[in-house]
Image (cartoon, rainbow, N blue to C red; front, side):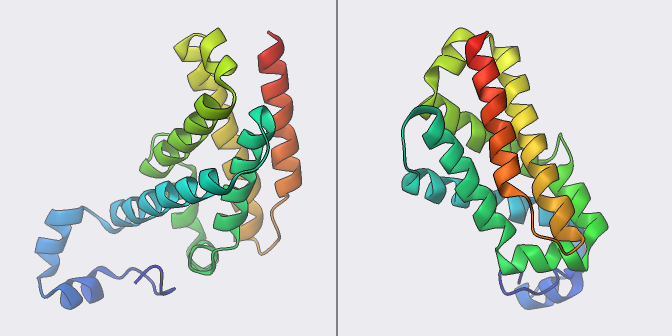
Length: 173
């Protein structure tokens, strides 16, 4: 339903699955939880595709992976329509720091750093790496989705430039 650009309606989904709404809620929790699961799953798939297609080496490759991810998600019609149709839910799901989507985003960024800029993870303690990854995720999410929700194009160049500056400073310390 989501990828078709339709609203994830629990009643409609339950009917399509041939189960009652109570059963569906027992399986997936509430609607926000279901949307979170769907978006986290899609995010993990997109990270893999972007990592496979990334160009360059080192920090440039990690940033290219992030740029490709942000570009793909910001211009994915079903996700963009969802964000504009249900902005409050989209903001809760996409920007909740302890949510499933944030977990998927952190995993994608961490994987890119470990693969392409291993000196970041080798030189810093785990907590500092977690903080750098979290800053990159929160930065990217805010710069991508706030503009999309209000109908503007996200400043992806700015997001990547700021991410690059953070990585440069991190590598110097």
